[in-house]
Each structure stands twice: as structure tokens, then as C-alpha cells.
Length: 64
Ligand SMILES: [Zn+2]
View 1 (cartoon, protein in one colour):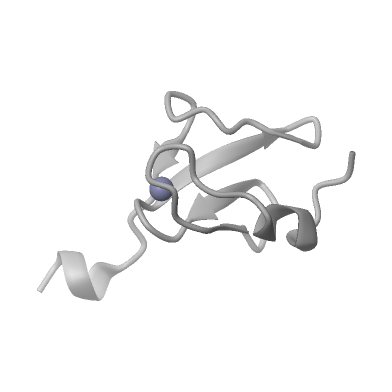
View 2: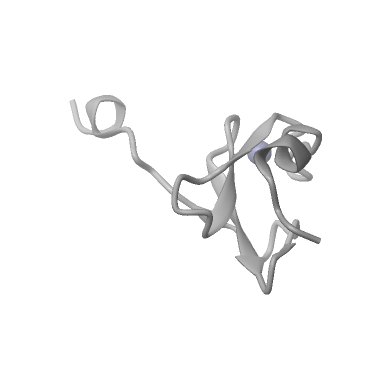
């Protein structure tokens, strides 16, 4: 099954229940709540919190 943005929009983060969205490079999907990034392996989204990495891409907030 192809991973599409429409498909991802129907999913929620298993860790916090927030919405997730497809990363621009389609390497994974990112939670808008806890910022976990779930990997996409062979076009399968790995929605496992233990597989996720936390991506901090908000330098203004984290490094005042
Ligand atoms: Zn989350």
C-alpha cells in the first residue's frame, strides 16, 4: 500500500493521540503533538512508539 498524505491524515499518534503528517521527504510521519517521527520502511508506516525518534526542529523554542 502506498503511503499517501490522505492515508496519513486519518492516522493518529499511538503515543499521544495527536494528528500526524507525512514528512516532506516521505521518510517518515511526524506527530504534531509529541514530535515523534515514525519511520516508513518498505512503504509501511511503523507506528510503534519504541521505533519512533523525537525530532526537535523548533530552535526558537528550545534555544532562547
Ligand atoms: Zn504524539
